[in-house]
Image (cartoon, rainbow, N blue to C red; front, top):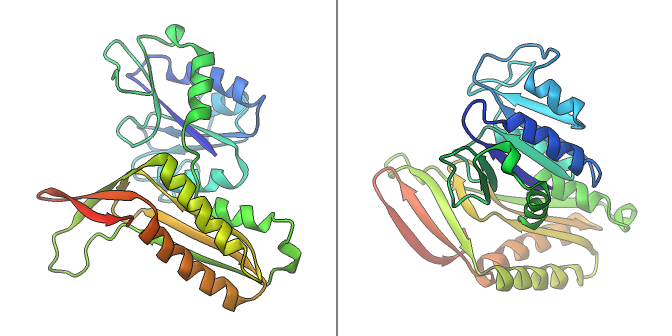
Length: 275
């Protein structure tokens, strides 16, 4: 799933831009949206931003306040919503999360020039450039989307097992450890992609293994968030378990992913490959 954020000050035209992007993206595939809201969630009404998202073509919209989730009051995060959308959406547009590590289109006269795209107003945004930028970003994957991918394999009817591994960012190893706030991962993109593909192909060449999916996030990953997934579709649990274990071990040993750990009092680069 391709994910793009739209941010900017109030009345900058964020929702108008989201509507325009939705109309064009819906020509390419299914689109979901997430809207950050500043008020207590309530039943959606005509004219609200989430209603405008759906009228522009979103198949599903999540409106999330800081402590609750639109329409249910259930605690919900942006990443929870993106995981839900990743199963059946090809695109997701996120409105109003300026401080998160997402590819962003930023509106406003003081827009960050380091953003993927920046414009003083919605009228100044080139929609063609925005669409190209959306297609260029690294796809968002979740455990749910990876499992759905292997379940759709042509060999799924021969499979009796799906095994998964999820690595996440530890807050601390023990109660006495200094808490970790987040990790930053950097990759040698071309080399990392090539080596992950080699690992995947080697695992899929094993007898009884039908499909393998590997994914490692880059950028900033907060404490408690998922950072790496290995998913294996196999004939039996023994082949599935062995392939998952070998997959994560090889990913850590062979893929050039480097991490910086940021704690409450400092930061340092960990000179090891992957998390």
